[in-house]
Length: 222
Image (cartoon, rainbow, N blue to C red; front, side):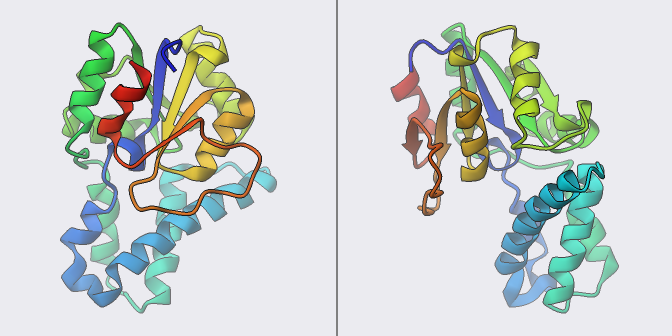
């Protein structure tokens, strides 16, 4: 893994903690706060995949809104203000505690660092700045720039072109196993952050390494 010259992270989940807004409003969401969060995330993936197959590109901000409305509807959360606040809070997320040290270590080692996300450029930049990560990243890439979603090969090709590096010199780090599959299929080296001991995807495109927290990354790549 030492051959990697650039490290690209998925923003929401690998470096930014997306559950925090749901934690903030758990009293209003009730006992189903965590379940709503999980359903929201899975529904976003379903909607983006479905819209991609339909050739109906839609802003990921809107997809997130549709998915949250669905998840809240399933569990009887009707308060529009709560949903609005949760979505707006994703412009002001915090990062996981070990993220800054890892990014700094990679920078100190002369590595290029970047994030890649389905999220809109505006919301993505705002969230990363709020978390204090903007100065630790060399690139912030959104799939909205090419009007498609991960895990399309076009997304990883877009990043490869932006970094001006061959794909076998790029390591993709994600908390999403489906995202890892897409990056691995394209030819990136990959590391899966499996914080919650999830079952790996049963696909032939697997992560090269699996870690339980981001702080473990530097010991295997530097």
